[in-house]
Structures are given as structure tokens and as C-alpha cells.
Image (cartoon, rainbow, N blue to C red):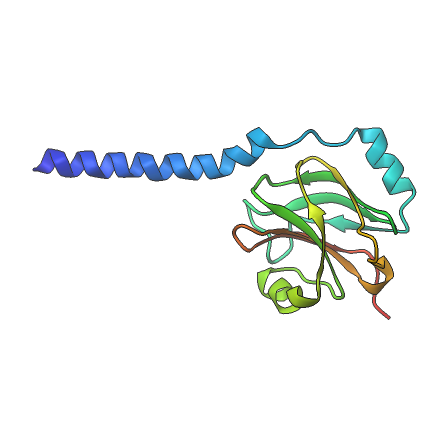
Length: 159
């Protein structure tokens, strides 16, 4: 009986550990290659605005963070830096700066989704037609699957 309990406990722990590692490593293994550095640098040079991403935001933690520079133009939002790997990352624009889950959830209805992040060491996304970057102030990276704040950068002050 004691042996069966130990077997169930150790197999259960292995299952939980395996699932957790799979959730963490699958996005890394399936991530697309980041755009070439020259493409990202060109997008940054042509941008109207830029913002620094920091790991020190209240909503960021050891598993959910971003660092580097976000560049924003009328046509493109690009990132030179690194993001913690994870599933189903989306880039949003918001009208006010948010730095955690609660802040983003409070403005999510008015946020505009720009696109999917498919690489963790830089990205470039087209701004959808009809989206005016002047109507917004902040770029937010959000994990849709787990409703997790990853990072944000305020590229301009409202007003």
C-alpha cells in the first residue's frame, strides 16, 4: 500500500513537472526567427516614437518580462531586445500607461490589438489600417492564454 502511494505521488509529480516544462519550452521550440537586425534597426530609425521596456515593472516578474526598445511609427511597431518566452503573446496599444494585469484589464476594452509576437528576441508588426498611433500612448505585450502582463512602454505622453 505504501509503495502504491509513493508510485502515485512520484508519477503525479513527474506529470505536473513535464506539463509545466512543456508549457514553458514549447513556445521556445516553435518560435519563429526574429527579423534581421538591419530590418529592426531600419524600423527603429524610421519610427516617430520609442520607449524603453524594463523588467522592473510591477506586473513583470521572473517569468513575465521584457527589455529593450519599442519603436512606433504609423506603419510599424518594432522591438529590439528580449522577451521572456511564453505562449500567445499579443501587442496592444492603450490610451494610458499600464504596468500590471489590473491596469491592462481596466483599459482592455479600449485597447487595440496590433498583432501576434512570434519571436522573443525582436519583432516587427504592421500597424493595422485605420489605427492612428497618435490616439494611443503605450505599447503593451500581453499573454492572451494566461491573461498575464508581460511588459509595457509609454512612447508618448497624452495631451
